[in-house]
Length: 317
Image (cartoon, rainbow, N blue to C red):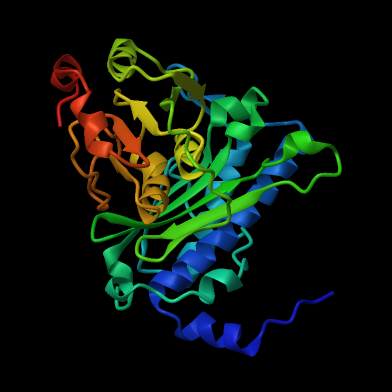
Protein backbone atom coordinates (compact mmCIF):
# COMPACT_ATOMS: atom_id res chain seq x y z
CA UNK A 1 0.00 0.00 0.00
CA UNK A 2 1.38 3.38 -0.99
CA UNK A 3 1.67 5.84 1.89
CA UNK A 4 0.30 9.32 1.29
CA UNK A 5 2.19 12.20 2.86
CA UNK A 6 0.24 15.02 4.46
CA UNK A 7 0.18 18.15 2.32
CA UNK A 8 1.91 20.19 5.04
CA UNK A 9 4.70 17.58 5.18
CA UNK A 10 5.17 17.73 1.42
CA UNK A 11 5.41 21.51 1.70
CA UNK A 12 7.98 21.36 4.50
CA UNK A 13 10.14 18.95 2.48
CA UNK A 14 10.98 21.91 0.26
CA UNK A 15 10.43 24.93 2.52
CA UNK A 16 11.78 23.84 5.92
CA UNK A 17 15.17 25.25 6.93
CA UNK A 18 18.13 23.30 5.55
CA UNK A 19 19.13 21.97 8.97
CA UNK A 20 15.74 20.34 9.62
CA UNK A 21 15.58 18.89 6.12
CA UNK A 22 19.07 17.46 6.53
CA UNK A 23 18.19 15.89 9.89
CA UNK A 24 14.94 14.51 8.44
CA UNK A 25 16.87 12.97 5.54
CA UNK A 26 19.53 11.61 7.91
CA UNK A 27 16.91 9.89 10.07
CA UNK A 28 15.47 8.13 7.03
CA UNK A 29 18.93 7.26 5.72
CA UNK A 30 19.84 5.75 9.11
CA UNK A 31 16.59 3.75 9.11
CA UNK A 32 17.37 2.41 5.64
CA UNK A 33 20.94 1.61 6.65
CA UNK A 34 19.65 -0.30 9.67
CA UNK A 35 17.47 -2.44 7.41
CA UNK A 36 20.57 -3.21 5.36
CA UNK A 37 22.59 -4.12 8.47
CA UNK A 38 19.90 -6.57 9.58
CA UNK A 39 19.67 -8.07 6.09
CA UNK A 40 23.44 -8.65 5.94
CA UNK A 41 23.47 -10.20 9.41
CA UNK A 42 20.57 -12.47 8.49
CA UNK A 43 22.36 -13.52 5.29
CA UNK A 44 25.30 -14.78 7.32
CA UNK A 45 28.14 -13.58 5.09
CA UNK A 46 29.51 -10.51 6.89
CA UNK A 47 32.37 -9.94 4.45
CA UNK A 48 34.87 -9.26 7.24
CA UNK A 49 38.15 -7.47 6.49
CA UNK A 50 40.82 -6.99 9.16
CA UNK A 51 42.03 -3.36 8.84
CA UNK A 52 44.93 -3.98 11.24
CA UNK A 53 45.28 -3.24 14.92
CA UNK A 54 43.26 -4.51 17.86
CA UNK A 55 39.64 -5.37 17.00
CA UNK A 56 39.73 -3.15 13.92
CA UNK A 57 37.43 -4.76 11.40
CA UNK A 58 35.33 -3.74 8.41
CA UNK A 59 32.31 -5.67 7.16
CA UNK A 60 30.01 -5.54 4.15
CA UNK A 61 27.55 -3.70 6.40
CA UNK A 62 30.12 -0.92 7.01
CA UNK A 63 30.76 -0.53 3.28
CA UNK A 64 27.20 -0.82 2.01
CA UNK A 65 25.71 1.44 4.67
CA UNK A 66 28.22 4.20 4.03
CA UNK A 67 27.52 4.07 0.30
CA UNK A 68 23.79 4.24 0.98
CA UNK A 69 24.05 7.17 3.40
CA UNK A 70 26.39 9.08 1.06
CA UNK A 71 24.11 8.49 -1.93
CA UNK A 72 21.07 9.63 0.03
CA UNK A 73 22.54 12.83 1.42
CA UNK A 74 24.76 13.86 -1.50
CA UNK A 75 21.86 13.57 -3.96
CA UNK A 76 19.82 16.07 -1.93
CA UNK A 77 22.58 18.27 -0.49
CA UNK A 78 25.39 18.32 -3.06
CA UNK A 79 27.37 21.13 -1.39
CA UNK A 80 27.44 19.48 2.05
CA UNK A 81 30.75 17.80 2.91
CA UNK A 82 30.35 14.17 3.96
CA UNK A 83 33.16 12.39 5.82
CA UNK A 84 32.76 8.70 6.58
CA UNK A 85 34.87 6.15 8.41
CA UNK A 86 35.21 3.80 5.47
CA UNK A 87 35.85 6.53 2.87
CA UNK A 88 33.38 4.80 0.57
CA UNK A 89 32.40 6.92 -2.41
CA UNK A 90 28.76 7.60 -3.21
CA UNK A 91 27.42 4.79 -5.35
CA UNK A 92 24.97 5.85 -8.06
CA UNK A 93 23.45 2.35 -7.90
CA UNK A 94 22.58 2.77 -4.21
CA UNK A 95 18.97 3.61 -3.39
CA UNK A 96 18.97 7.34 -2.70
CA UNK A 97 15.19 7.65 -2.32
CA UNK A 98 14.86 7.43 1.44
CA UNK A 99 12.65 10.48 1.85
CA UNK A 100 12.42 12.66 4.96
CA UNK A 101 11.14 11.92 8.44
CA UNK A 102 7.79 13.59 9.17
CA UNK A 103 8.38 13.95 12.91
CA UNK A 104 11.58 15.92 12.32
CA UNK A 105 9.87 18.18 9.79
CA UNK A 106 7.07 18.89 12.29
CA UNK A 107 9.53 20.53 14.71
CA UNK A 108 10.63 24.16 14.69
CA UNK A 109 14.24 24.85 13.79
CA UNK A 110 16.19 26.77 16.47
CA UNK A 111 16.73 30.39 15.47
CA UNK A 112 20.51 30.13 15.33
CA UNK A 113 20.30 27.39 12.68
CA UNK A 114 17.57 28.92 10.53
CA UNK A 115 19.75 30.33 7.76
CA UNK A 116 22.76 28.03 7.47
CA UNK A 117 24.15 27.21 4.03
CA UNK A 118 25.20 23.84 2.68
CA UNK A 119 28.85 24.84 2.39
CA UNK A 120 28.91 25.49 6.17
CA UNK A 121 27.91 21.90 6.96
CA UNK A 122 30.01 18.78 7.48
CA UNK A 123 28.29 15.44 8.04
CA UNK A 124 30.31 12.83 9.93
CA UNK A 125 29.22 9.23 9.29
CA UNK A 126 30.06 6.05 11.13
CA UNK A 127 28.01 3.56 9.12
CA UNK A 128 28.44 0.79 11.70
CA UNK A 129 29.82 1.84 15.07
CA UNK A 130 30.76 -1.24 17.06
CA UNK A 131 31.91 -3.34 14.11
CA UNK A 132 33.93 -5.71 16.30
CA UNK A 133 30.85 -6.31 18.43
CA UNK A 134 28.80 -6.88 15.26
CA UNK A 135 31.18 -9.66 14.24
CA UNK A 136 30.93 -11.14 17.76
CA UNK A 137 27.11 -11.08 17.75
CA UNK A 138 26.97 -8.46 20.54
CA UNK A 139 24.22 -6.74 18.61
CA UNK A 140 22.95 -4.34 21.27
CA UNK A 141 26.32 -2.52 21.05
CA UNK A 142 25.91 -1.69 17.36
CA UNK A 143 24.79 1.73 16.09
CA UNK A 144 24.61 3.79 12.89
CA UNK A 145 25.86 7.34 13.52
CA UNK A 146 25.20 10.46 11.45
CA UNK A 147 26.49 13.68 13.01
CA UNK A 148 25.88 17.16 11.62
CA UNK A 149 28.33 19.99 12.26
CA UNK A 150 27.91 23.64 11.30
CA UNK A 151 31.01 25.81 11.12
CA UNK A 152 32.91 23.18 13.08
CA UNK A 153 30.39 22.70 15.90
CA UNK A 154 28.33 19.52 16.41
CA UNK A 155 24.71 20.74 16.34
CA UNK A 156 22.58 17.71 15.44
CA UNK A 157 22.84 13.96 15.37
CA UNK A 158 21.15 10.67 14.59
CA UNK A 159 21.84 7.39 16.39
CA UNK A 160 20.13 4.27 15.05
CA UNK A 161 20.27 0.96 16.90
CA UNK A 162 19.50 -1.65 14.22
CA UNK A 163 19.08 -4.50 16.72
CA UNK A 164 17.37 -2.68 19.58
CA UNK A 165 14.99 -5.12 21.29
CA UNK A 166 16.58 -8.15 19.62
CA UNK A 167 16.54 -10.16 22.85
CA UNK A 168 12.77 -9.79 23.21
CA UNK A 169 12.00 -12.77 20.98
CA UNK A 170 11.69 -13.71 17.29
CA UNK A 171 8.53 -11.64 16.78
CA UNK A 172 9.83 -8.47 18.44
CA UNK A 173 10.06 -5.26 16.39
CA UNK A 174 13.73 -4.47 15.92
CA UNK A 175 15.47 -1.14 15.86
CA UNK A 176 14.96 2.44 16.93
CA UNK A 177 16.23 5.85 15.89
CA UNK A 178 17.22 8.60 18.32
CA UNK A 179 17.84 12.11 17.04
CA UNK A 180 18.45 15.53 18.47
CA UNK A 181 19.26 19.16 17.71
CA UNK A 182 20.95 21.52 20.16
CA UNK A 183 18.38 24.14 21.09
CA UNK A 184 15.45 21.86 20.21
CA UNK A 185 15.90 18.67 22.25
CA UNK A 186 16.28 14.94 21.66
CA UNK A 187 13.68 12.39 20.63
CA UNK A 188 13.07 8.68 20.16
CA UNK A 189 13.83 7.28 23.61
CA UNK A 190 12.74 7.23 27.25
CA UNK A 191 15.12 8.81 29.73
CA UNK A 192 15.57 7.28 33.18
CA UNK A 193 16.35 9.18 36.36
CA UNK A 194 19.99 8.69 37.23
CA UNK A 195 20.55 7.08 40.64
CA UNK A 196 21.72 9.72 43.11
CA UNK A 197 23.46 7.34 45.51
CA UNK A 198 25.95 5.95 42.98
CA UNK A 199 28.27 6.91 40.15
CA UNK A 200 28.20 4.75 37.03
CA UNK A 201 30.95 5.23 34.47
CA UNK A 202 30.92 3.58 31.06
CA UNK A 203 34.08 2.96 29.08
CA UNK A 204 35.70 0.74 26.46
CA UNK A 205 35.43 -3.03 26.60
CA UNK A 206 38.33 -3.79 24.26
CA UNK A 207 40.70 -0.79 24.07
CA UNK A 208 41.61 -0.20 27.69
CA UNK A 209 45.07 0.91 28.84
CA UNK A 210 46.84 2.44 31.85
CA UNK A 211 45.59 5.97 31.15
CA UNK A 212 41.98 4.81 30.86
CA UNK A 213 42.17 2.78 34.06
CA UNK A 214 44.06 5.45 36.06
CA UNK A 215 41.51 8.05 35.03
CA UNK A 216 38.52 5.94 36.05
CA UNK A 217 40.08 4.84 39.34
CA UNK A 218 40.68 8.47 40.30
CA UNK A 219 36.95 9.13 39.91
CA UNK A 220 36.09 6.26 42.33
CA UNK A 221 32.91 5.10 40.58
CA UNK A 222 30.53 2.67 42.25
CA UNK A 223 30.19 0.77 38.95
CA UNK A 224 32.10 0.58 35.66
CA UNK A 225 30.14 -0.55 32.59
CA UNK A 226 32.41 -1.75 29.78
CA UNK A 227 30.64 -1.85 26.42
CA UNK A 228 31.51 -1.49 22.74
CA UNK A 229 30.86 1.42 20.40
CA UNK A 230 31.16 5.12 21.22
CA UNK A 231 27.56 5.67 20.17
CA UNK A 232 26.41 2.92 22.51
CA UNK A 233 28.41 4.36 25.40
CA UNK A 234 26.99 7.87 25.02
CA UNK A 235 23.52 6.31 24.70
CA UNK A 236 23.98 5.06 28.26
CA UNK A 237 24.24 8.71 29.32
CA UNK A 238 21.41 9.87 27.06
CA UNK A 239 19.08 7.24 28.53
CA UNK A 240 20.13 7.90 32.13
CA UNK A 241 21.86 4.54 32.59
CA UNK A 242 25.31 5.99 33.32
CA UNK A 243 26.63 9.26 34.69
CA UNK A 244 29.75 9.61 32.53
CA UNK A 245 31.69 8.15 29.63
CA UNK A 246 35.45 8.16 30.21
CA UNK A 247 37.93 7.23 27.51
CA UNK A 248 41.38 8.66 28.25
CA UNK A 249 42.92 7.39 25.03
CA UNK A 250 43.33 8.64 21.45
CA UNK A 251 41.35 5.74 19.99
CA UNK A 252 38.04 7.23 18.84
CA UNK A 253 37.40 9.47 15.84
CA UNK A 254 35.22 12.44 14.90
CA UNK A 255 32.64 10.17 13.24
CA UNK A 256 32.35 8.35 16.60
CA UNK A 257 31.58 11.48 18.61
CA UNK A 258 29.81 14.06 16.41
CA UNK A 259 26.28 12.60 16.54
CA UNK A 260 26.40 11.45 20.19
CA UNK A 261 27.89 14.78 21.32
CA UNK A 262 25.11 16.79 19.66
CA UNK A 263 22.33 14.67 21.17
CA UNK A 264 23.90 14.67 24.63
CA UNK A 265 24.38 18.44 24.46
CA UNK A 266 20.74 18.84 23.38
CA UNK A 267 19.82 17.21 26.71
CA UNK A 268 22.10 19.46 28.78
CA UNK A 269 25.12 17.16 28.90
CA UNK A 270 28.62 17.83 27.62
CA UNK A 271 31.37 16.01 25.72
CA UNK A 272 34.98 17.25 25.46
CA UNK A 273 38.53 15.94 25.48
CA UNK A 274 40.23 15.09 28.80
CA UNK A 275 41.40 18.71 29.16
CA UNK A 276 37.87 20.05 28.85
CA UNK A 277 38.48 21.40 25.35
CA UNK A 278 35.62 21.49 22.85
CA UNK A 279 35.94 19.11 19.89
CA UNK A 280 35.94 20.66 16.42
CA UNK A 281 34.37 19.15 13.33
CA UNK A 282 35.49 21.20 10.33
CA UNK A 283 36.30 19.24 7.19
CA UNK A 284 40.06 19.77 7.59
CA UNK A 285 40.47 18.74 11.26
CA UNK A 286 42.32 15.62 12.38
CA UNK A 287 39.79 12.81 12.45
CA UNK A 288 41.29 11.26 15.58
CA UNK A 289 40.30 12.61 18.99
CA UNK A 290 43.92 12.56 20.15
CA UNK A 291 43.20 13.87 23.65
CA UNK A 292 40.52 11.33 24.49
CA UNK A 293 36.90 11.84 25.47
CA UNK A 294 35.08 12.76 28.67
CA UNK A 295 31.28 12.99 28.49
CA UNK A 296 28.86 13.57 31.33
CA UNK A 297 25.16 14.13 31.87
CA UNK A 298 25.95 16.87 34.40
CA UNK A 299 28.84 18.14 36.53
CA UNK A 300 31.18 17.72 33.58
CA UNK A 301 33.81 19.99 35.14
CA UNK A 302 34.06 17.66 38.15
CA UNK A 303 35.09 14.76 35.90
CA UNK A 304 37.65 16.93 34.11
CA UNK A 305 39.20 17.92 37.45
CA UNK A 306 39.48 14.25 38.37
CA UNK A 307 41.60 13.41 35.32
CA UNK A 308 45.11 12.79 36.71
CA UNK A 309 47.78 15.20 35.54
CA UNK A 310 49.85 12.22 34.44
CA UNK A 311 47.06 11.30 32.00
CA UNK A 312 46.75 14.86 30.72
CA UNK A 313 50.50 14.93 30.15
CA UNK A 314 50.27 11.84 27.93
CA UNK A 315 47.20 13.04 26.01
CA UNK A 316 48.31 16.39 24.65
CA UNK A 317 45.55 18.75 23.53
